[in-house]
Image 1 (tube, rainbow, N blue to C red):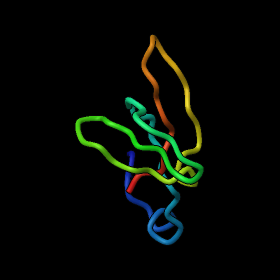
Image 2 (image 1 turned 180 degrees about the horizontal axis):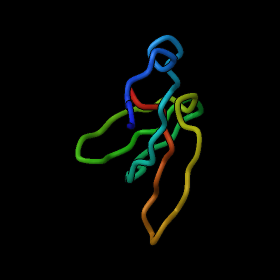
Image 3 (image 1 turned 180 degrees about the vertical axis):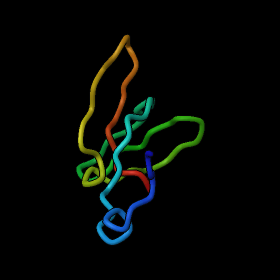
Length: 64
């Protein structure tokens, strides 16, 4: 039987990352202004990857 919740995951939670489709509006040395329905400044330290798929930028960011 599959048990989705374990004691190990509760004690040692790992960081989750997701790919998000965005439109890059402006870039500075420390942050990027993106638009994915609303305009948000994201620090470059939270971005762990950028890729271009079919003329759409996707960024790999930490959830939260």
